[in-house]
Image (cartoon, rainbow over all chains, first blue to last red; front, side, top):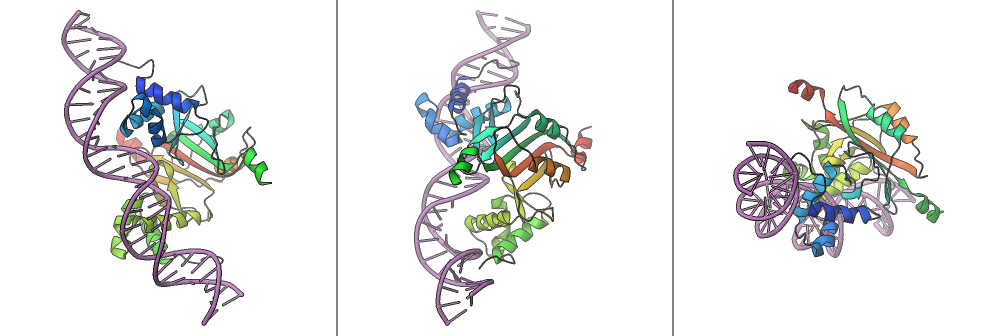
Amino acid sequence: MRKMQNLSKNQQIIFDLIDKSPEPLKAYSILFNVQKRGIKAPLQVYRALDKLVEIGKIHKIESRNAFIACQNSSCQISKATAFSICESCEKVTEINNSNLSKYLTGFKDKNGMKYNKYNLEFFGLCKKCISKKS
Amino acid sequence: MRKMQNLSKNQQIIFDLIDKSPEPLKAYSILFNVQKRGIKAPLQVYRALDKLVEIGKIHKIESRNAFIACQNSSCQISKATAFSICESCEKVTEINNSNLSKYLTGFKDKNGMKYNKYNLEFFGLCKKCISKKS
DNA sequence: TTACAAAATGTTATATTATAACAATTTAAC
DNA sequence: GTTAAATTGTTATAATATAACATTTTGTAA
């Protein structure tokens, strides 16, 4: 077996849930939601999440320990990710900006390290939350 | 009380430990190391860590759940952080590049969000680890 | 078409990371 | 000195994640 063309049963169940969600989901909230579909243990969830992250179908929002479906059709492997996070309503959006990704992919620091991956999280207030406060 | 000029006892103990460490430290490893100095409970560690992050003396490496002393004398409040992380030896270095910080601080996405903070983590192989493998 | 290896699954237990809730003490400004 | 904010101490528990082992499914190549 060289590659899986399709997602396995558990992977599909968990991806569907994340993909339909308007907000990032946490592992145990996923577990709760898929128990009726036969997934009973945390490890079943984490294994599916690991795989889905690996193949780029979902991303982990590190500062939130939560998972979001990839909103960028071109990123099949998640080696360059950027997100905006509203600190008020917690809305998370994947940033797909070729200028930004070019800048960061080409970034070289003085330490001589070769980067093959990055993750960027911006924090602030989304439009809705800004107008609520004014 | 408007501001603390100096760190409190627990904050100082924990900052000293992190500051001396060549690598990011995890909360429970910190706890283990400061038990001989009278800090017995996780919450004592987490409270000090929270405060130290808030005032910019340390940063949290989100992808590692670990803490590193600020290596950038100018960042008293940690609202714009960037790190390079070696995926082989786990060495973490704070990136202090004014070009990068200018680019990211000025970055505007099409969603109209106003960013007031960001965190960027680059992954790759450090010089040492590259030469080991070749 | 069966045999094989990789991938995925199932299950129990446990490790790791982090916070809730409440009481007491210390600190700095007035 | 009084006061309010900050810090500390303590017990319990919540939330996040992995170890270890057995079994089953899947794709592919003999």
